[in-house]
Image (cartoon, rainbow, N blue to C red; front, side, top):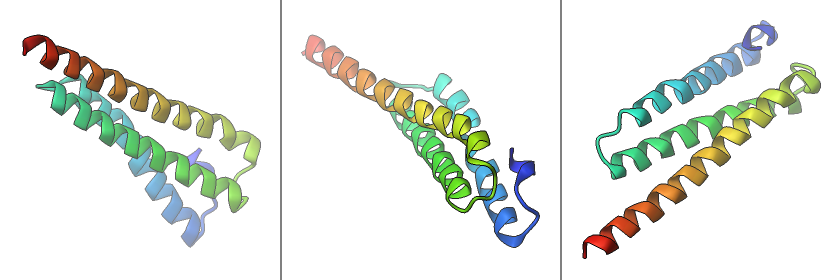
Length: 106
């Protein structure tokens, strides 16, 4: 979809930003899978959440500026928002599990 953006200055800027944050979601999720501790896991989930949210932001800009047809962008925006929701939920679960473990130990 990034290649479908207009070959203009604004199109180029948005393309670059969108590619950076959307690919960062995948690479940082890989880092989540290699976390060394629960705190590291939660921290890295936060990075994935931020990058997915930024991806959603740029997709919203594409829609608002009519750079690509809304119908083509909306499924990607929906997916980005779903990734954000999954990361938020995963962080909550991880925090709750961490507290349970700490309370059990004490």
